[in-house]
Length: 393
Image (cartoon, rainbow, N blue to C red):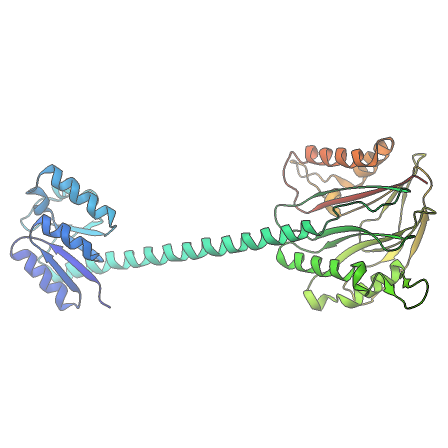
């Protein structure tokens, strides 16, 4: 549809401008006095051509009222003079005009100025629409990330299993976007507790989706990987850690989500302090003995998603009273300082050795405080997760 143009001009010059515009296919509204022009603004023309003579013949109050009306409806304006008012005078009368028609008697010049300003107006409208769509899309993405983060946090353990032989503590510091960390602690039977920590590659909703899926695969009630129900005593079978990781590797090939993930998986026996474990490409679990000795648990295999490239090996460690075991994500050691320095493994080892005389929960809290101080209070670039287990015997 052709644009609608309002021409406000007294005398024959206005008629010539109107004729030029009509011959070019524009819909034209015409006013010969300022009051009529104000009324026609209600029709929301796409452009206004204003004879500065009309303003010069009006009172200052009427000029101000007209200018306010024109700016309120945000209609672009081209000024011109029907009787040869100088350019400086026109600028004084119409400082809010977008441009000037120097020769209103020249049809080519008039159309060039009109088409130029209409094109600029169209481009501005398209840009504004694109910005609105971009803002709406960004809001949608942020809402999706917020929902994913909420779901991720809801999967973290909220209560500690009832096991007097062990004390548990954990800390979780999410990055600014949605990361892929998840840890859990579940009582599988009267004799066995399961603990694990996973870290899905990447960030965002896709990583969170994989996290949720793995959580469901490792749910005790699903009867798929971590606990199999039997119809005879002992009525359930607890697969070993290496078997669980082999099942995960089969269930989560890289081609399925285009994501890898690492995991450390533990089975703890409260009655004995024995821990069976398997590590799938994850930072090595740490054992801090009561006497101050540090051990790393190295048995396992590669990250999940490699399609059985390397068989998973299971390890076992015996905890004695006062010993502690820690599992963590690489967000801990890869926490950057303001100077770009990594927190690193050695700082973590030194801190855990130092904190072995503190209650395990307090030690975890102090570690997070130390990390924040090291990072200058900035949010981490990756999720930070750590779980500590102390065996009381």
